View 1 (cartoon, rainbow, N blue to C red):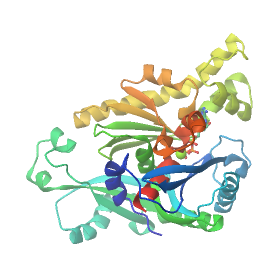
View 2: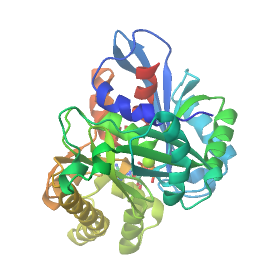
View 3: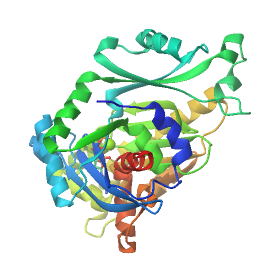
Length: 386
Ligand SMILES: Nc1ncnc2c1ncn2[C@@H]1O[C@H](COP(=O)(O)OP(=O)(O)OP(=O)(O)O)[C@@H](O)[C@H]1O
Ligand SMILES: [Mg+2]
């Protein structure tokens, strides 16, 4: 199974916002997250992407766990979940792309001397050993030479004085994915009857659907169930990435503990009310809900601020804005808290703006959008590259 990353990076900067191929077949974007699977079906039409259908299914119940929990389930169960959501959403397409969790991949930027592609091909598996803590024959490698913008120095040059090697060198984006992970997805796809045309690391999918135009560096926070992904993107290139081992599930657990609720109830109330005061609860209860929810967010935001600061110091330039994605970014009242906690401008991802949809769906798509950032991004790639 081929997975290509290189072309992806190249396409991000050139394709976001531009038209898709003329007419053609409907395509799928599939994101199997730790707590839920999302699927999006798009159709190319007159240079635009039309949203045909979408769906999400919680994976918890397929592993005997409540909705909202991150679960590890066998591939057969995941395939069963996919088939369920495809049926519910009336999915008709049978081919598309599938995202790969950031946590299952290793992404590094290598600084290499400028050599011919043939020599690079021999050099990379050897260089990769320095960055990858597992034997190179257990992973699938892909790489991409990061293009230098004409007339623009790379951020790298600005921090350190150029030495002759750096002046002639090249930056190579290296990605490694464990073969077991790819094999697992092959089983899932086969059992769900889906043809997977490509895999893509979720970061790149989220960038395509959530970052608009502009070359200034942007920080994306993907608030998932068990983890939060933080990465900085500049000109379509991931400059820095960071995985935090807390997410929405942690928030629900805090809430459940503080109010003596079970996980199911805490998960439901979190999604319904979040940080917005509810008349259904006493002032004391409202206080406890807010405190529990904030305790997770405070940790996430202080990490984001730390990453912003260290990026600024390392590259001598500032991130222009923060984009919040992932299911956790749908938390009611999140915007206000994010604005006051973060040192730069904040927005909530709205990936469905890239697809045409009936007007009456606009609010729903905006509300659920952040959780679909990856799935929409995958489908857009397939649509745009054919
Ligand atoms: N409306 C909402 N308000 C608050 N939290 C929400 C809302 N909707 C979903 N979540 C939370 O978002 C999290 C799931 O997000 P998402 O679906 O992006 O994660 P995932 O992709 O399954 O996980 P990961 O990205 O870690 O693999 C859960 O913790 C869930 O409780
Ligand atoms: Mg996710």
